[in-house]
Length: 124
Image (cartoon, rainbow, N blue to C red; front, top):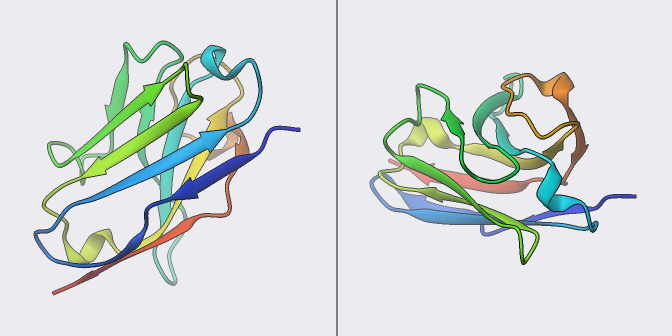
């Protein structure tokens, strides 16, 4: 069973930065794409960013493009999300997830294993 654990959330002010980290178990980590999704109160879970198995391809939601950066370290089985210029609209629970394949996707159904989430709150 693959376990996914997020860390790094917190309460910050608008304009600040946060770095989320995700650790995933399993010896095949480097053969799967990874992604971050988020869910704001009363809203559906939405795609934030994804990275391919090798890290050579990344994609972002339009709302975070230019502000967020996803990266991975296959030697450590980790994937990070650097979030800069945070806005109140970025508030939500952030989830790290492992894909069912090596390919990136923005679709929730393409992801198999999810962490419990980490809360990110941006005050105005």
